[in-house]
Length: 336
Image (cartoon, rainbow, N blue to C red):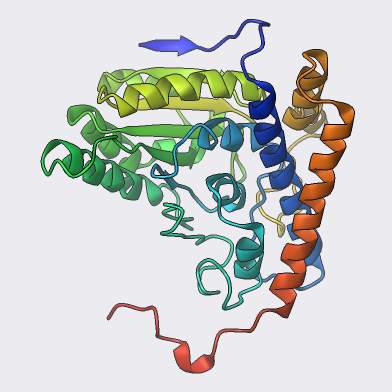
């Protein structure tokens, strides 16, 4: 079953949901903007890949999950981690390489992990997280159907980029997920570029959601710049997975507003292309929707934004003040 998602103009979300969604999107945007400032001030090191512009995908999917569900990301993982509930101060401390970070300062930007929040990582290599997410889905269905240890079936969300869909793990894992009807949703954040390679130059099937047809699972294309469409499709896919009906492949058409990483001068993409997508900023469009449907007042929006900015300021101070890992603990979390 292949489809393109569209929604009606009727309000899809409640006032309280609108507050949750907007706060999460704004948190992701301000966190990433702050990361850029800290990176250029020499507070962060290594490769840092920002998520700016893609917030509707993370919020629209993860905020519809339950706490016991799982999320597996890639190297552009900061905002996925925030949406799953990892506190900004723990995440910022991790990016600073501090002991108080969610990965004890050992993971850094590309290896965010938290067992408490069922966040399975950040992975630096392309498509590396797909089998991890699949394993979590297998574990969940085994615990329910074979061991009878749980009542509600947890769902696994696997976020990947468009470039990952040409890798072997992608096809192998879609086949296994379909064969065993695993409770997993593959979310392809098609931001049009795999580092410096445009999608149309890299894939013989440019409409990625159609790749689901080979494995007899639903594939759907959604406007990843429109959080309402993402919410609608994610709720359907989550309900399907949780009820034991198996996986879904979602292709979210989106765009990153910055270069591949903060070390990327971003010279390959044209100004016209960037301006086209920036004009569709998902946060600005969602604010307009909120106001048009009287879901949140201007004063409430300002309160949310003030609250978020304060949390980020506190996160930066926490990260700066936190201790460095002890050199004697260099091998403390290694398995050998």
